[in-house]
Image (cartoon, rainbow, N blue to C red):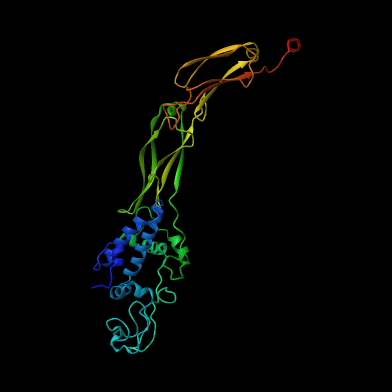
Length: 368
């Protein structure tokens, strides 16, 4: 019978679990609740901490034995309060007569005389501050577990995209891999990155809406074979009507597998340059080219909209370089209300002559 089961419950195992079962339970729970894989879940970090602390105690046979006998509070405070000298029935001050442990208590507790009046306090000797045992950083527990090879449960290396880097391990430990040098603080596990890919789309496709099939290559890691490979995958990217430049089409967990998880891919929409139209928000603009003579004396043109309608435009002259004519509802679909459209705006580009003869200049001076 164990004193309590809270640490076993944190790993979803029974108090009779074997060391291998404890390792497997921690591996599964740590990967599931790792904060880098749960950026939108504020409770993940606390669960990650709970399973890490449970593993730190239960994976050590002596600490586990002490926990099973006396519970977590006993460990955290370094043992019970000093015994009452008048209480002769405590057998050395520990429940059940712990004075029977010669030379000290399992798990690193300080020794105690077998009599009841010693007045000593008892402290866990592994990393605890004054008053008892203190847990290691959850990130350190996670790193040590996987870098020891336990993460593969029998095969070297890291599962699910977590790669074993001997140089980094040596750097963290202040020496070669496996060095007994004092361990330096572990570098923070890098956050899963977002890969942005530019996606040029024609104005015609944005006007009509379409689906683009794009082939990507992504690096994957097979935990069963402990091998990395490149996998080709076809993504169907939806282009909604009126989608604006700069819009992001997101594909979570479709990029390369890296330490901490799998990358997200964001496709960033760009307007492809068009020979006729320029996009301005929901409006489309087009220019007609005029000679100086036409600008001064009059002109007419037929221009086509993006959906093929012909519109007549013109002016009797003179036409200024800033002249425009609006055609409401003939532009691009509005992204939030694609049944509505912006305007089609026609402007002019006046082509000035490169040179004039003296006679032409003279006549223009007379006319103007």
